[in-house]
Length: 293
Image 1 (cartoon, rainbow, N blue to C red):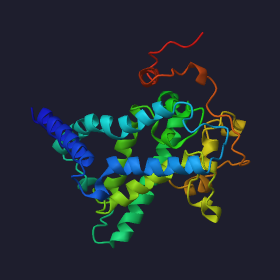
Image 2: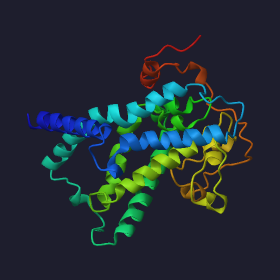
Image 3: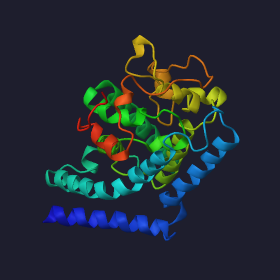
Image 4: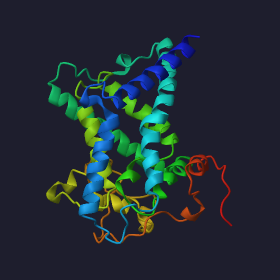
């Protein structure tokens, strides 16, 4: 009963917070609902004004499907899964494992900007590493294929991913936070909004390289090759795994940018078997859909 109550309260709390966000009843800097919409509209406007692949339509292939993915993964599924994470938190607490008990570094006394920087670096590295796992292991790749089934790149493709990726990413990101004292810095919303913006830009139809900063920040040219259909044989598991930062790819030699024309075929061998609808794609990772003959 304790677990069921925790699930219900967490579910209701997240639902209530989302509804308040829609009604502008939460502080603007924590309003991820309208923040996501604003960032999406700005990046979309830049795509329309400065298109990299000019033959690509404003409403590109799967535009509306990817838009639905944005709100489903960022809000609808998050509301449901919040209760599950609360149950897991209680389960581990009953075993004496809490956020504080696993902390390797107590950074609560550090300056705010240092806390924020370390939080961002740890979070981004954990996501980069998890991203590699999604490509390396077939059972995980089967879910990640949904994201790589994009055939025309645009900002909304950023949040087109199988719901199981939420299940995989969240515990590892939480573990990274636990190492750093068990909580997010007060200004963590800055990191989250930055991640949304850079992720949208990386998937956008805009040619940006950031100049000398390309060795630090991920960019649309670099990330386009992460989605490339054809890759060198020695990089068969993929390239350019960076989320917000390109730094890790350059350090660990997983970068690959042979040219920057933007005329790159996207997808993966066998992507013709991927269903074209939301439900079909989200059961595909479990092998429940029929392949095309």
